[in-house]
Image (cartoon, rainbow, N blue to C red; front, side, top):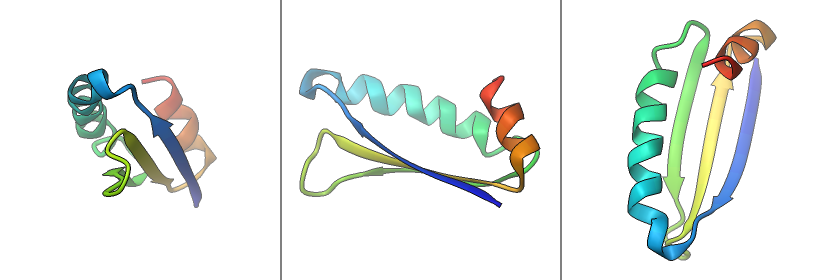
Length: 68
């Protein structure tokens, strides 16, 4: 299994745009072969901070995801 946790800080005036873009990214990612989990979490204390938690079955699944 391959797991990645990414912290993303977004400019305050771009939060809504970021959420919409990542909603589309999420919908595609969870349908990929080998995807086990893809969560987008917004920090409850810092509204402009997001965490992306991704889990894939193996390195091949990660490599495929990077092409999408």
